[in-house]
Image (cartoon, rainbow, N blue to C red; front, side, top):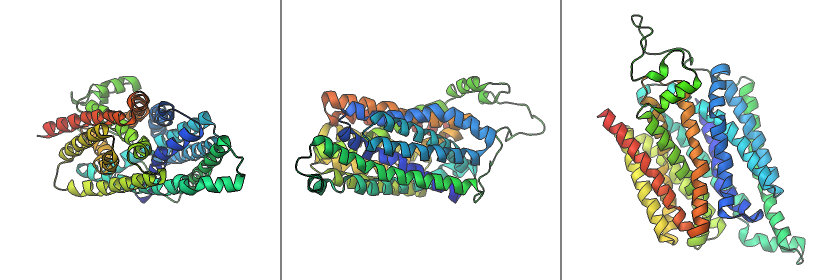
Length: 428
């Protein structure tokens, strides 16, 4: 299981460098807020595009090969982002983010269901929240060290640059100097991920399929071919698209898909504009804003552990409802304040978002009496919400002001409340 937990850590690093990458690319490539939000679009469209191929690959080649392939894509994409960004080639950087996301899709499509399958089904939400706690650790460290690499020299880097390049150096030379800061962190990620792929490939782990995708569970010798009417997605002879259509018509699983779609959009949007909001309304420098983001992600990790602990006594659906409703209220306050208060509220907002993804995922899967691999693939595809809602926030920011953009996350948390309420009602 420790090899799987390490994957949660690794992809958190990729996700949580994006909020730091966006303001840097915005500066060095001279982009609008809408254009800079294309970082998230390229990243999460990659998830959408590769979720079904990842599920098919896992079914054909197994979890271990899928994880190795995902790490290879991850490494190539990271190197491309570093090279493209450092050369101020925005399209190349976007391509690298797309390739990175393709790799992460393979990793997440394999790792999330593995954690839910390896153990007691009744404790699946608790187990996945524990695994996602390592995701929180990776997020915290990525924001902290990424901030040091990209923003810690903001106060002195201009003076250093002028001293090195001469007083005649202009804006173009300064932007080139800033862009070069992107190369190191992403090359380090590329090296680490390709090394980990080699480690797994050479057999130093025992990642196997816990359950064959073609092996039915909960069957009896008396009724081997019986399919309950509430499980039409398991009817024999269904092709891929027929099974997808059937799953999309199954309640409350389909509400879980919508909740995940909206939640990821909210989470990505909150993080993507964190630095911009902090420097615009919080009266702090980029380096302080990055430290604030790191503090928020530390609370995010603590929230995962806290949620895992509380689920011993509080039903996951009820905890999900309370956390998502609180996140919606905080986001609304951030949207209307446009002040340092909004910046300080962005930090604890991460705490209340922490349990949402793994709890939505596990409750959605467990709402199906027998979840096929396609159910996990669709939930990973729903991550594409991160490609659209930040774009909407960027458009609102350019037109009306950055603070008003945060009304989008406030609205996005409401379908999560609805899903949690539906699951609670079903259990009751």
